[in-house]
Image 1 (cartoon, rainbow, N blue to C red):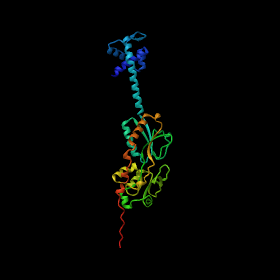
Image 2 (cartoon, rainbow, N blue to C red):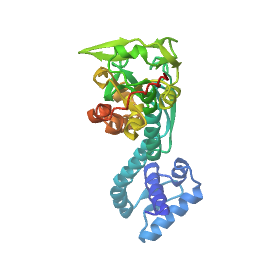
Image 3 (cartoon, helix red, strand yellow):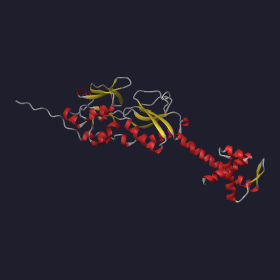
Image 4 (cartoon, one colour):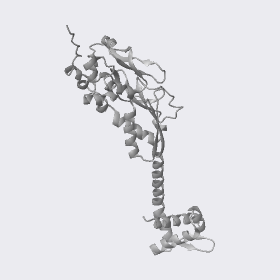
Length: 327
């Protein structure tokens, strides 16, 4: 329907409701002249007189009454549809507060946010990455991510994929220092360690011993509070590292890193997305949660399989050569 026809019918219905073309013009925020012109156009288009007019009052003709009964429900339905469309647009616009740990999450989250913004360009993600544990209520979080056993109490959590902690090194490291064949052998190797930015403490390596998850202290040759820095040190062949599987996966698959002691990789923690009650969430938050669950749940890109984890078992780097002695 062309906009002049829509205005003409809206003017006609409002004039019928109020009994005055001037009042109808005021209610529709148009001039009396525009209202009179719109009504005249409609009567000319229908070739029918719709109102009896006097100096004080206007009343519907029989043709006007039939038209009112026919078009009023349709117009109300159209107005509701337009209002619903505007409401939906408003729900998919504005800020979206996302929080999570800086460690291991940045590349995953950026790809997710990028895809989401392509679908909903009027939403402005407000992303806070911090390895310190915050308060999701005080921080006004819409959607959060968590690495570990489980998120805070009082929130709903969806498990995405397991958090693998892989002991690995570059082929150059094994060429120079050899391959550890047990956890005890780590004491004679150069290891990296992660210093937690929240507590300032050096985190032990987390390993599995039998069916138990235990801490494996290491004497760090290199220590850092930044995962990217630690990754570069491991790739350079300077140290062994225990890296998150999602971080190490592309380098293990390309052969730049080799996993070792895979039988001791812990399997007790996971990545989670968490949020408050879905009934009180804005639609944009629900849409982002749904996308995160769809894209990340058990995504094989972020999880190393058994063959990849035990690649070093059939492709073991050679032991370091000993310098020959001269007699």
